[in-house]
Length: 298
Length: 328
Image 1: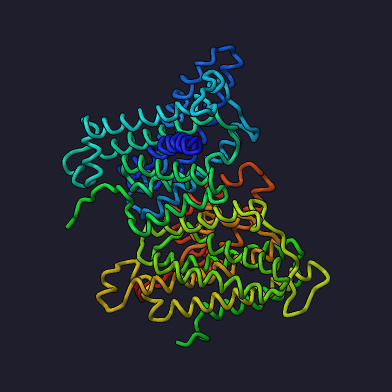
Image 2: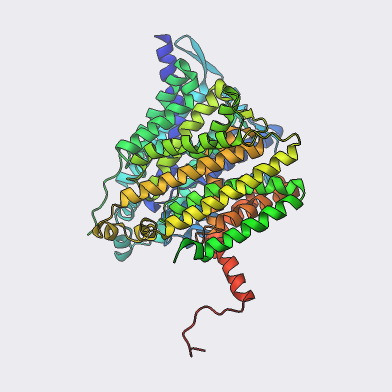
């Protein structure tokens, strides 16, 4: 019973983490039809920026809770700067090209951004433990857990609710749905599609950076930080259905719980199961479990 | 026109002769570079077959890694250490796996083709990384192979022998792919990329044609992986099976360009040189150089290096691009 609870909690924490990092990816894919490999860079840049700034703040004697403000500030900053540079500098010239070529262009940008990190932040790892230390630990089901990890669940829930509200209940959400449904028709109706693209890409980038920035206090931020996240978030997004927000939630839950189960019961299958689930879903439902309904074009 | 009169085949044969003589004269570090470059070129040749149909796989490191690990595991656990046997096993295993996976893969296009390949390759990665018996994250080292029973005392002579074998096999692979591309089935390649429905109306099965392409590409990837394992003398999951390895292979394909079966050999060599020098010159920025090159090729050189080569050749022979007579 205790193991079951541990698995469930571990799974939930990991799922929340996965959802936060995959949300931006799936939104960008849904609206722009771009499979964005640079998402891993947003993640890594967010983590590095947050860790660096938290370190600075700690040295300057700021209180530990400032770390939380810094995390969100870092995510917004990174998303705004990198998102704008990539969308305006590279992607806007690629929209008429093959989808696969766009993926390759984002892969090229990812490689460039990876090394820019090394040039800017150096090769030594960063530690930004202050926010985690501040929250301490709680005992749940007989096991001490760090409270910070549990707040991930809250953040994921807030983001899920917020994105649902924005997409379903606001003017902006309606515009987005129109572009997702049919880009050309939306243009013909006088919608400024390139502005929608810019805003979408920047928001997606911020979400990716937020994932990295929020996870930064729990790990050592070191080179190669973004590499594994890319395929993990691809798996989540593919399982749920590329471009679907509820899909990303289901995908994150599936991957998170399955992985937690594997870690506790069959540790040698930890990575295997994730991609086995991804392959299985692709084989039987290539559009994913919760793919958004596609407009039929004649 | 028979294959022997095909200009690409003639050029490849000439290049093979020149390279066989040259390789005996060049210093050993160039032999190593050529080994890495041409091992990768064989894989890229297979990716070119797919790329001509606008299919890009983000998971061919699966077959590359399968080939490499087959060589490593066979030599480690059976004691068989002959290059011919090891490479044959590598090519065979990846072809068999490719054949069965192909039944699923052939139904997918575009992003989904890329992603499903990625998923399959990450499954192998997940197994390798977590299994001690398969070397986990460290991988294995591989002993010097023998060649049909002949063992070379001197390591550099062994490398040279491997390079000669690699060049002959590479030549055969390139000629084979050229013959395939000239056949009716091969000519469907571009047609399927352009419009699959029309191909189906002509009475051909696009899925069947893509399955054959896929098996060819997995055979070549396994073979190239086997050669790479012998050339490096070691295998490890992160540089051979992880998704970044697949990305590297796709990068070399784009860099080479789809123009000719000779392009992968040039592209891979340039990639190897680029990597070596970029790494020595600024170790923390070589990925940046590779990524930047990828962007430049995508934006400004859609034909890849091969397009540069043909332009250069045309300029050297002062041949104008075929203009109608009297057109000036």
